[in-house]
Length: 275
Image 1 (cartoon, rainbow, N blue to C red):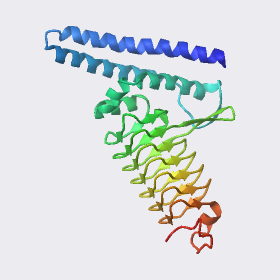
Image 2 (cartoon, helix red, strand yellow):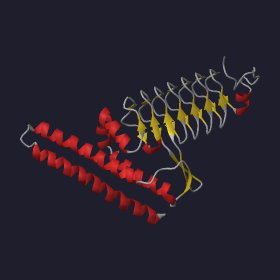
Image 3 (spheres, rainbow, N blue to C red):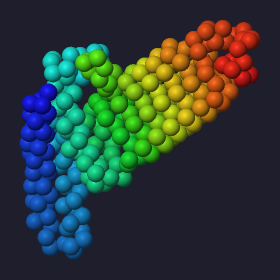
Image 4 (cartoon, one colour):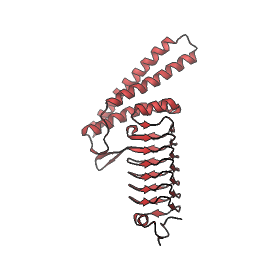
């Protein structure tokens, strides 16, 4: 493991020097060509050239990486694992604090950056500059969707010595408010609204136009139906299914047994949906 970490650092630094060096060289050429311009414009043109060239280099490197295959993969073995490692290096090079802020503060540069890293993202989507997108190659973001401040979206998970890879989908018009954590396999339906500090676990799904209150936890495989309303602080247990249009009272636990009998009037008042 220790040797692997050292090798990772060497490869990362080598790749970073190559990408930054190529981008700086392009910026220098532009600066020399426009040296007669006012200083502000000359430096601005060189800075934009640096960012665009860096994005272009990242796009080429990403295209050369092995594709990521959803599933469980052995660590340190196989094309999906090494493809994930290489893509993580490229992402870290582009997402260095400072550079990432410039890239994500521009709608055009943010779009180009995410596309370069393999994300299937719509131009009209919006991603906060301080959101963490750990696996852009496994991310789909629809038109008009919003990923808010300090959200964490990841397409990988390490468990039992294996690397789990799966896609994450954020549907058109969906909103993830501040500090929402979204894990591999999660799907956020169109126009769904997810309030702050919600945890969407492995394979959890939120239906179209559903509203998820603050501090909600959706355990692995949980499903929230279309237009459901989940109150603040609710816990939906693993593989439970909240019916379409259901209303869950704040600070309750919704379990599999309750979900299966949601069409009937449950006597379990602590977990039953509020009508």
